[in-house]
Image 1 (cartoon, protein in one colour):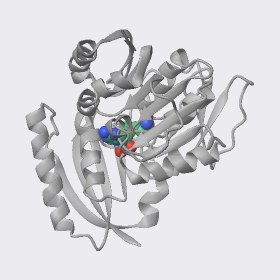
Image 2 (cartoon, helix red, strand yellow; image 1 turned 180 degrees about the vertical axis):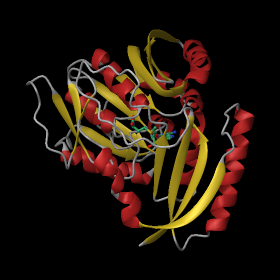
Image 3 (tube, helix red, strand yellow; image 1 turned 30 degrees about the vertical axis):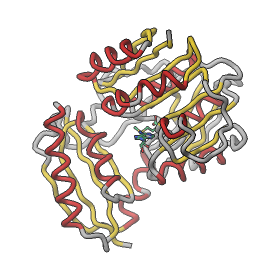
Amino acid sequence: MIWKEITIHTTEEAVEMISNFLHEAGAGGVTIEEHVDNDKPRDTSLGQWFEIPPNDIPEGEAKISGYFPEELNIEAVIEEVKGRIEELRGYDIDPGKAELSVRDVSEDDWANNWKQYFKPLRVSDRLTIKPTWEEYTPHSADEHIIELDPGMAFGTGTHPTTSLCLRTLEGVIREGDEVIDVGTGSGILAIGACRLGASRVLALDLDPIAVTSATENTRLNGLQKQIQVVESDLLSVLKNNSGTDLQVKLPVRVVVANILAEIIMLFIDDVYQALQPDGYYIASGIYKNKEQAVEEALVAAGFEIEQTAREEDWVAFVARKR
Ligand SMILES: C[S@@+](CC[C@H](N)C(=O)[O-])C[C@H]1O[C@@H](n2cnc3c(N)ncnc32)[C@H](O)[C@@H]1O
């Protein structure tokens, strides 16, 4: 099958917004390439980093490609995406030159090529992400495995926003906790929470591709009884609009959300309502220039910041409901 590939050269800061725009415009998949620096000092205490083939993308910049079925009106998609990128400037997000190009590609060129770079990754003492097609033997009985085939959904664990969540979850989750994962993507955080002791997780996503991927990964990990995947946002669940019988009992002790700062700020009050007193909110997906705004919004909503975790240019908060 032939797909139309739309590629945009932009900044790291704008990557997640633009990949959302491509998904919403009907992309069957989105790939992101960022600047590669294999010489950068890395924390290797938990194992080797895998070298990523170098590219010509300057530091701070990124290349995003969205893949669209041939029969879609590609001119209309380009106009829509261009318009939404321009709107970013009004939100203080710099998309750079945002040059856009289009070409025809075959499915094999994009759907499977990335798999060769996705290797087992030890994200913390107790959690290792293992692509389903790779062999891996845990080093000890305490090392828990997240089996994953993310397909076209976000969440391989290699992005700092995801690994920040997994590491902070490790310090927060207690045996038997009930958890809500808002924006579950591949289901990686929901599976990680179960591996750390959560008894039940409600995994929410608005994107049907993510819902399919999270459901499949839940099955691959044998966690169908513990993880309930629902196509919804948090507010609809709280208002009981989703028409689904929830398997977690509200309010829960932990909510985790790895979404963009702009979206995180929209549903802070919903998270507050979904949490027990003293419950924890792990909020990730925050680019460094939005750190202060999100912190202020969390405090204003009644949270106390217990931990601010950073990786590369990204920030995650562990906030406690007062
Ligand atoms: C950055 S990905 C995170 C995926 C995964 N949880 C991880 O940590 O790697 C964000 C996900 O949130 C979903 N999303 C965006 N806005 C949402 C909302 N308001 N409610 C639920 N999901 C949302 C997107 O479809 C996407 O799958």
